[in-house]
Image (tube, rainbow, N blue to C red; front, side, top):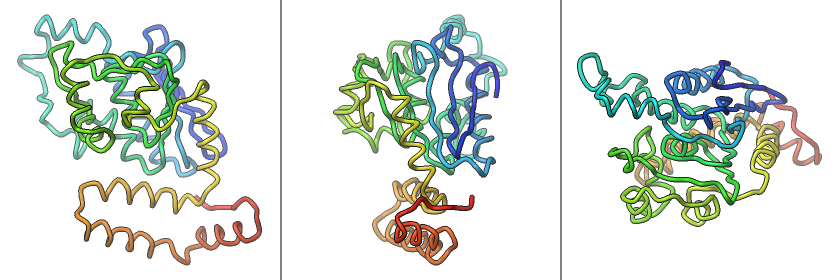
Amino acid sequence: MSDRIRVEIHQGVADVRLVRSDKMNALDNAMFEALIDTAKTLEDTPEVRCVVLSGEGRAFCAGLDMQSFGAMASGAGNGVGRVPLAHRTHGLTNRPQQAVWGWRSLRVPVIAAVHGVALGGGFQVMLGADIRITHPDTKLSILEVKWGLVPDMGSTAIMRNLARDDVVRELTYTGRIFSGREALDLGFATRVSETPLEDALSLARDIAGRSPDAVQAAKRLYNGVTDQDTAGALLAESEIQDGLIGRPNQIEAIMAGMENRLGHFVD
């Protein structure tokens, strides 16, 4: 895709890797653009059924690069010409938020394979995934307080559904670093693994072998019910199920299950 992200697609799985490894995949302007553009491209690629998001080299993502913080300290970007973050550039989101929310709203599941460090913005990119597999020794942090900022990039809308409110507050107020093993206990990681990328790719292949109609409908359902009341959530579940019953991929799923074979689904 670019000198920041490389994508390989095989049997429905998009292997997406941050490749700014000399900078521990830190977020600069080009990386933000690559994250946004890659998610949009995959959204429009019908054969993609699942995505694995990882970082090459020593880290998943070290967060915002130091040049960006240097620009903030010098006052650059704070005056004339700076676009306020409250300005919506991508529907619900601003540009930095879309680098995370693009994965959250992508029509297919996204699995983050996390190792090394995922600090600040890197932690937030990780949160955009549906499923997060971390190495137990990964160093993670909601680091923004160190730079005089609050968590952003859409992370506050996601964290409220992952961890207890007091846990999120403690990590936000202190910026302390915690391990991938602790991330599992806190609710930020789905599982820990000594080989997160291999496990993520294996899981992605399993998901890609399921009915894409059902998997993508399930993601729409879970993305939508978060902000609904009970009545709305129950209705949404029924409406989405009605849209699946009797369709070709649903019938093929039944036949494959009854015949104990892999399904042959149409994207």
